[in-house]
Length: 332
Ligand code: NAD
Ligand code: WQD
Image (cartoon, rainbow, N blue to C red; front, side, top):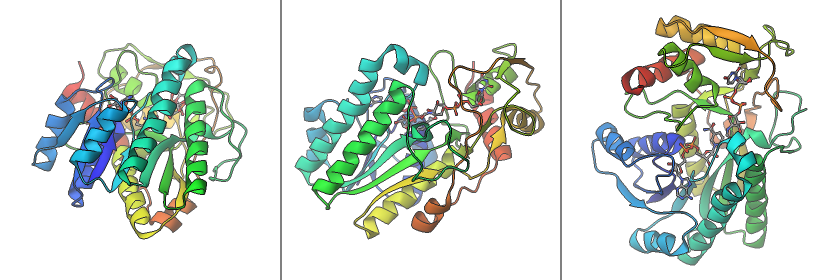
């Protein structure tokens, strides 16, 4: 049985679908601060069987102990946490509380239950801004916001935990830019309030919810001058988690691995691809660079291929198509 914290959220819910597809049993633990139980009903529609879940907060040791007591948990996928960079600047205490304190409480409960296999959601945001691309896992880390700092602190803690007790099996996965949705359009990304990530904004402009997209800068050293990112389909990420779990089952190891495609796509290319596959127009205007934005980011994905045998299979066409299908079916 796999415990999935934050399993009703964007990446967690898609990963649960993949867990079910390959025959893993799982239990979702989520406080629904950024999701709703309705997601679980959608997941049941996709997998064709009930989803086991508990409402609870990862900062609550008693709630976690209850879950471990009630299920034979062999490994944990830890997605639960807060993830908005800008919000983290105004609410650093909340971010450290959910992301760091929450992770510490989880590790404590795991240790008490004798479950020492963990996959942790980290982020490419931990890499310093001046790294040559593609960026590999041994590049220096440097963070400029509280959200990124919480990821690095937990990474450091996991390192120390593994050093103190080699029985721990830990995969720290650094996601690049997750996007897209399940092809059924039953689950996808549902940002609360105004989205800040590119693809949800593109979708909302295409749906007429917003008049136009602002492109933050066209003077980066990329072929068309707009920013470049390593967009990775959320179903590929889901498969990456299952691959990490398989790796940890076979190896008593601690690994840190990038999950991306290894290819950069510019903001303008995303818009053009989206317009082509959706048949919708995405009006845009060029505005100055966003504060503290990095220009170009894409992953060195050799380690993921070597260690996990995982390679992202879906291209930007598929990411845009699935994101739009989700928006068209569920957006208001
Ligand atoms: P999400 O907000 O959609 O999902 C997180 C889930 O965790 C939500 O369902 C939320 O209700 C739950 N949650 C939050 N705090 C909790 C707590 N204290 N206790 C229990 N549940 C709690 O986010 P996501 O995009 O699916 O991200 C999942 C993980 O991946 C996060 O840790 C995030 O930092 C990391 N990550 C996300 C991205 C991205 O761009 N989406 C990129 C890199 C890393
Ligand atoms: C992508 C590109 C923007 C919006 C953030 C977090 C990071 C990680 C992923 C969690 C950039 C451009 C965007 C818009 C634009 N999350 N853009 N107009 O910046 O790579 O990373 O999400 O770990 O921590 O910082 O993603 O989607 O915000 O931006 O031109 O309205 O789109 O400048 O080039 P980013 P993003």
